Structure formats: structure tokens, C-alpha cells
Image (cartoon, rainbow over the protein chains, first blue to last red):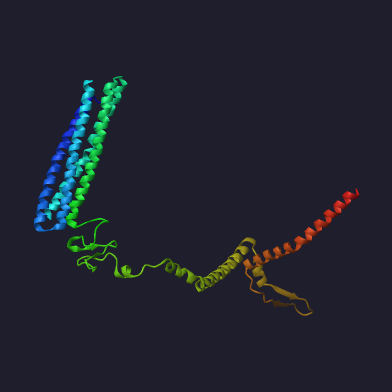
Length: 85
Length: 254
């Protein structure tokens, strides 16, 4: 049987992994913005539109990753409350 | 478009990492569930309720993780469509690189419908351009076959039956000879001789016999027995009827 401390440690590890993931998604988003600028400067409208859509998706993914971090924080809070009760 | 390819590779790596988080999150949930169950067994309901809340939050986190994976898949498709043009069923005509269009039959054409240079036609022109046969066209050949072809086939089958009958006759004669040690009735008939009594020397005259095979003789005897049975059947029935009437009359008289 896992103790409450182990549950909290597991949730913390997941939170750290998701935070790292959020940083990577932000890096991808920055790359998408750069590519979008290049496509616009070259006048490749169709490719620029596709990259812009890609950038929007990455922004959405980044926001959802933040929500995931919050949700894991709530889970950790609940586990800590169980420990102190 | 090297940068777009790099971007697509980055997004794909992010998606793989999100997919890899599924296991650890599930593991956390399992740990929390087991702990909540154990605490509830100990009778500490307040702590068990808090841990069940933690389980619910982790489940929600797992749902969000799956949604992020889906969004990254869409982002990857967008990046790839920036390289190759719009892909998939929704691809519009002329959306490919150089304005080419990939049709459902696999042919790559230019905007004006001509085959694009450097692309092989997946389907040959005679198959692509010929009209699609209708159900009536597909059914036509068997209909034509029914008349003359079936007659020809029947004639062919008749020859086969004749050959088989000849082979059966030959085998029948051989088998009869082997089993009974004498020629079969058919052979005996063929070899039949008649003896004529006279004051002169006996004259042996060979009788020309019709060529009847052993199988034919068996069939002939079978048919003859059938005829006899059919002929005798009404007579026997009539006899039974008369005898039953006599019996009834005797019973009344007695």
C-alpha cells in the first residue's frame, strides 16, 4: 500500500514533467512564429496560413498544459489535506 | 521550407512526450486509489474522502493530457500541410505543391486537368476513360451463353457419357470373368452359337449378335424387372380385393 507521502511525491513528479513539457511547447510556438514571419516575408501565403494555424494550435496546447499543471496542483493539495486531517 | 519541417519534428516530439505522461499520471491515480481504500478500511473517513478528491483531480488531469495530445496532432498536420499543401479528404484542387492535384484514383494532374510532369499514372488511361460497365453489361455474357453454348456443352457431355459407358462395359466384362470364371452374359451373347440337327454333319453357324455391353445387359434386366413389377402390381391388387370380399362374405354367412 502506498502512503499519502508517496502519492504526493508521485503527483509532484508529474507536475515537474508537465512543466518541462510546457517549456518545450513554448519553444515550438516560438519556432512557429519565426517560420510564420519567414513565410510571410517570402510571400508564400498558403504556407504562411498553415503555419499560423499551427501556431494557434500550439498556443492552445500551451494553455492546456498550464491547466494541467493547475489540476495536478489541486490533486496535490487534496492529498496534503488528507495527510493533515 | 526546412524550418517548417523542423517545426513539424519539434511538435511531433512534444506529442510523444505528452503521450509518455499517460503512464505516470495513471500510476499516481492508482496509488491514490489504493491509499484511499486502505485509509477507508482503517475507518478514517475524512482522510479517505480527501484522497478520493485527489483521485478525481488526477482523472481530470489525465483527460486534459489526452486533449493536449490531440491538439498537438492537429498542429503537426498543419505544419505538414504547410510543406505539402492541404492533405486529406478536404484537399482542394490545386492545393498541392506547384498547384498539382492528387485525384481519388491516384493520378496527379495540373490545374487544367492534364497529367502533372514527373508523376506516374496509377490507373492506365484505358481503364480511367472507359465508361463504367452497368449491371446489365455485366450480366450479358451468361445470358448469351444460355442458348448455343449450353447446347454445345451438353453435346460434349454426351460424348463423355458414351466414353464412360464403353469403359464401364469393358470393366464389367473383365470383372465378371474374374469373379465367375466364365464370360459375362454380354460376351456369351456375342460368342453365342446355334446347333442345327440334321442328317448331315452338324453345322455350326455363328449367330451375329448385337453388340450389347455388360452394363447395358444389367440395365436391360433392371428395366425388364421394373416392367414386370408394374404389370403384376394391378393384378395382385385385384386378387387381394377379390379375396378380401370373399372373406367378408364368409364372415357374414358365418
